[in-house]
Length: 109
Length: 115
Image (cartoon, helix red, strand yellow):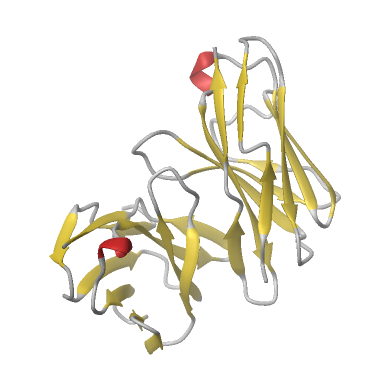
């Protein structure tokens, strides 16, 4: 089992819809969780970090963490074509950051 | 804040030459930096973890004699690709760890093309 798993997609949503991106991780000792956005040909950009169970909101983005289920998600409300990118889930496991393979999101006008 | 730069942003070199890539944390000190490689349409692959003042830790399968890493200061890490070959052509990305938040911030990447 991979340490961090994401559905590779592509995930396609219409403009204005909610995009839901999911990530599961295998190691229960993980304490820190991150979402990065990577546009094609560019390096990843940190968009959200979450450390405790529950929801964390930042603008149109909401990160959700459920440590019991070893599950972290990212919701993007009012999706825009500019949100089209690959979203990487990252999990800090004993000071070692592990990345998922990423989910490619396309927001169609 | 938390800005990381890389230089050069792209480089083209002949097979057999060595290429050095610099990674700098501009507004914070980073005891730990990371070097990644990404081939087209593939995921990030961690190559090595660079610790200031000590030897880098390489991931399995990464040749430490080919990819030389030096982390001589709290704001600078360098990756030297020695005797580069066409199969080394890739997008090399560094990141720096902001200790207080345990967050990694990425540089803009260096696109290496070996002819």
